[in-house]
Image 1: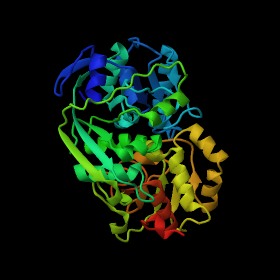
Image 2: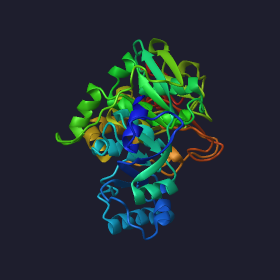
Image 3: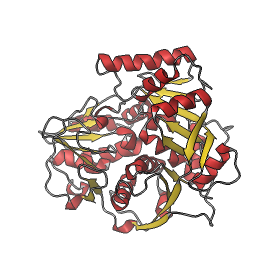
Length: 417
């Protein structure tokens, strides 16, 4: 069996599973935010949750509250947490963007089964967990019973070899892969990431790749736990924490196997309106921008902020461009202050905001006007995603976004000296 099949079998109480089987599986952790949580809460009514210690509530999409309606959503989440004594409720000031926050807080471990009413719940596959997004009704059922109904997905093995070029990151690997697979190339499949490049990739890079698996239609993205994984787990968990690491069998069956020579991959940019519309940055053409966003559950971690600071240090942002930088969690924000990164950002002319999804979904703190263009380290560039339906979003890694903010057009970091 593959790693995905092994995790699902363990949670379904079965010795063996095959793709296409339908199972009822026990869930280790359930997640909701201020958009999806209220819908699940209304479905639950007065019923009690199965375990208040295995539910996580994070107001992060329209928080801090952008208007009266979002305030009502966040209030409903808080009142539910109080009523049911939910252990893991993260209020503004203690919260972060959910998919960066949960691993940081030690709430995710290898081998676990995690569902969240957010499509990018697949982020936790970076730690060797089976993690997938569900609808609010499925989440409500899970909160009530502690179980989820699933179809076992086929797996695609993606092998990355060679050596990464300068400025090429996990974001570029996943953008390149989505460009190859297209947005439906992994529909209801598990994307399993392997190879010598993956074995050297940082946890931050792995979180980025797992996060964007859903942009190829995948049910989940997953990495086999290794020394890098276990070192991370030991850092955020107590030493007594139980870890169940699974690996795919050599004889495991895959729907498809693809290999990528990373020495040939350049920094990528995804042109609107799809994450699969990828090109090397140098081939994107002369595209002026009005806004750059560095942050989100995809690229708001320390490695991302350090990369942006490396490009921005000693430079000034283009006078007609706004650069918005959003550390993904409060801990990341504090560490960025301690490392002097925030000072670099402010001196360059950027604005730094509290952790929020904000502009990623066109929510607030960076919405685009008609005709405006943005380059962003976010995960989606659908029509109207960041604001007006006649605005445009281009996706890239943090170094490319920072370089573009300096020049006022989409720019390779090598152009900045």
